[in-house]
Image 1 (tube, rainbow, N blue to C red):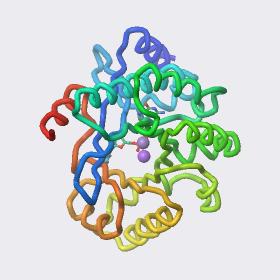
Image 2: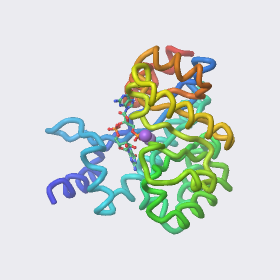
Image 3: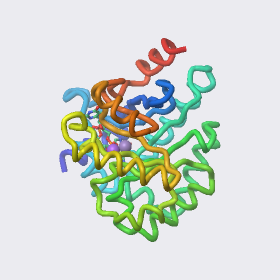
Image 4: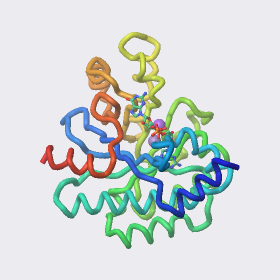
Amino acid sequence: LHLESMLRQGLREKWFEVHYQPQYSVERQQMIGMEALVRLRHPEQGLISPGDFMPLAEESGLIIDIGRWVLEQACQAAQSWREQGLYDGRIAINLSAKELDLDHFNETVEEILERTGLPADALELEITEGSVMQSPKQAISSMQALRKQGVLLALDDFGTGYSSLAYLKKFPITTLKIDRTFVKDLEHTLEDRQMANAIITIAHNLGLEVVAEGVENSDQIKILSAMNCDICQGFYFSHPLPHRDMTGLLREHK
Ligand code: G
Ligand code: G
Ligand code: MN
Ligand code: NA
């Protein structure tokens, strides 16, 4: 109850912040995307990570309001960087199952794209395997509506959920994100390399782009590059950055 009232107060008093983690193309070593990650900046307790409040946010339904706020903030930020000529990549935003299940969620997205001016194909929505599998039929039909609008769709944390390979081809996704548990020991563990390689091969055969998460060193990049992984994201490149630090990074790279 304490945490829930904190989340409610956070929404009212604008304690939430969106941080941005860059994604780099393996081939060109260029920032081609970024992932928006929400945090709560409590006036006394400091920065609280979504791992600590997301489960309750979902359970209580507060994720609907938080998620809509994140979507609006992140689309607005991306479009403002685009308009300043600082950035022409995409912005990836995490969705919970509850948001995807909302009737007319695609209309909310449409409305936010219109209001912010962000092109649909500059927005990628990330959905975890676990949340799609809560009600696959409904999730797939919501995903189809979003794809019709031109929004990109990524399957997040791939390899940790419960979907079978048979489902993978039914999801109207454009991107597969290899969970960081496969990347963590990539340079030390043959099995992880074999898993990563198999996932990348399957994804490419299905016409999907592959993002590796949790990349922390250059050995991992070399291995992923040899496997033709498309995009890398992780602490090796950058931690998630507050808005103004991301603006600074984009200015530096210009
Ligand atoms: O940033 P961090 O590693 O602490 O994120 C932890 C988890 O919270 C990740 O699994 C991420 O997908 C999730 N998360 C971060 N931001 C959002 C958000 O805006 N919406 C949803 N639904 N999940 C998020
Ligand atoms: O589940 P999702 O992929 O949305 O979660 C992203 C989370 O992973 C963020 O909370 C982010 O802080 C964290 N993260 C990003 N890069 C790395 C990394 O290189 N190593 C580790 N351990 N965590 C990372
Ligand atoms: Mn994610
Ligand atoms: Na993930």
